[in-house]
Length: 249
View 1: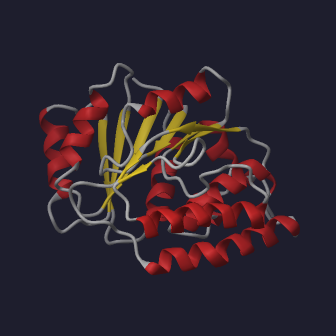
View 2: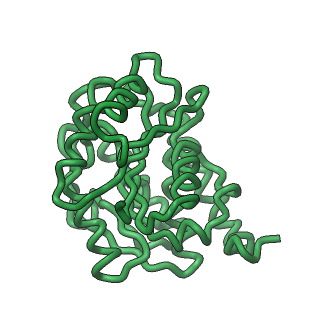
């Protein structure tokens, strides 16, 4: 048994999924993996099932959903799955190697050894550590985080990062059914809610490398959601609507 679960959402990731799974399982620390697949038409889920049946029945799991329902809802599905079991450290990670699996150990150490409640694999905590992104996208991402900090007061440099470790107690305290956003704003909402509820966060500097295989799932609606979403988040906090799950009415 492992104390750590890595949640990997997938949609059309047949080029990457086997390799990312084997790389994570090759690390010196033992992790379990949950793949949350949104009915990929390219056979991503079939690859995972084969790995489960032939090699990794005790540490690889898959949840299949009926359609492309959004990144945020995929993670919420995974969080609930993890909380129904005994995992103490729950990770978000992409399937496409934009996040280096070796950095899972550094995120784990920040929470397990240093006592933080969540740790963020940050592209911007020590400069701009992004490889092979078009300059326009780098600037959009960097200034999106600046905008989020301006509106919300968050001290986190990479507010839209999708490489995160949560302690179990953080996710247990957040009302996951009340998380509203699906794209970039989902990542912002989770971090903001965690901080508002009093949890401690550490940014761990990582190098983000743009995917080499497969296609990006980004679209313009994600940025629109984030732009207006942070205003909504700030207003919900001002009006006292962000509360721990146990006291929400």
